[in-house]
Image (spheres, rainbow, N blue to C red):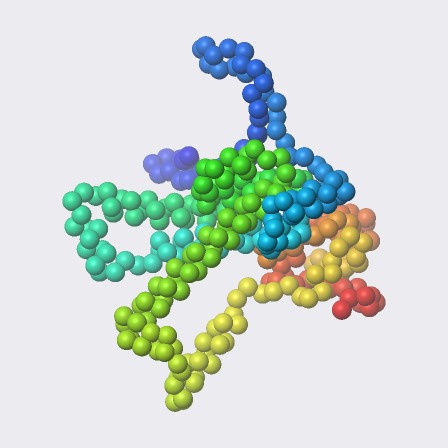
Length: 322
């Protein structure tokens, strides 16, 4: 979709965020000419009470997961963050792979191909990888607006993962058929984790292979020297490894309904005390916390990120935090 700019000659992309999560079962076909008309029943995920959930979990663990793998023991709250993290890693790997500069030999093969198809395909693959990452970033940033209800959120995350990674058709059919949102997420997480493991194995094999080819020493070529230059390079590498996304403070794990917190609103309002009124929602490295403030009774949904952790603190008179 494109929209004309002010000049009228050029067009710029116009991005639209659409929500498509309507599943249905055809109940009756009313007519087929001039176009199909049918009566359908919407299919939505079931909302199970805790007792029924535990019963189903127990039976599924006994029947389907005899080996008691990690995915069958993860709590419901862990599933969405784990799926999003795995999805992000897969898309990053795809983007890095497609963005790696071509070797002179690869460039020559593409340029001298009998047709322009290989080069066009390489360009299209790069565009597709960039588009998938852009969709993922928009999706995670808008997830709470798209699906404020937890049941809808679990469905949206699973189906978006299936779409972005292009999971096998058989698996996607199973994802659509099931009305157990938790089971769907476990199914998706198993597949995503398998893809991540395969990508990691391929990179490791390629790294070992390149080491053998280029140095003749393979893994042994990574042994550090003892001269001052080598030691300084190793120290610089260690410092670089410590640079990354700032982490949340340890006390953030204790935030739950009823916990008292303080948030630095701005220079005028200063520190504002309040009470957490809903369980935090974790999206990748960010917590979304709903706080009801004492001063005016208003409730706000606020992001708790590592790069803004200085704006959050436990109440100064509360010794319950570790």
